Image (cartoon, rainbow, N blue to C red):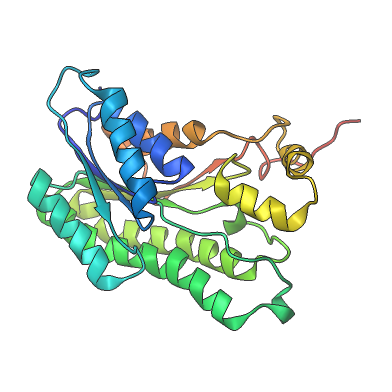
Length: 267
């Protein structure tokens, strides 16, 4: 029950990693606001979380859905206001919303597509920080986790916009962390590797004729020789949002099965 009594916002909550994290946070005692642009999926996920967790923790908790475009300034301000109205405070924020976009070489990449990816993955992350952090600073406490990627550390052919945004996510994390630490607020990011999500499947459909074969091939990037699961990201996010991570700030946590840390040598 590391999050008992806490209130946490999760964006991209209808997605695989977002929802897995919501389940973990709720199980560990938090009240959770689920934010997503996919209204139907958001509604399903919220009902699922409430039903599955009903009475499980034995403490009073809330599950709230909020439909919003996380790259729209007014919408972001709106979900933050709704959270403070419902919860009173914002103790944690998983700044997770993102999209993968189409794959193409940089010299052929569609300009409108580039702008769309940057808008959601980078501008959206900035807006979340812009409107959540003032409440945490005023309260003198809080923790934020941004979603970066192993694409924050390496180039992925065909994904110039996605890679640029995820490199930027690390920069935003470090900058915000340096600004609010002495005000009692921590900001970190996670860098998921090859995680079994609809976002990954969308990329695989563009890269491979056989998605299952592509999943296996990408899993070999990790020394653990498999793809990761959303809950394996959620567990790390939960830790970083908790008081157990009280001395972790401005960090980027790789959740990639060892892909970035090693060079495969199976001889």
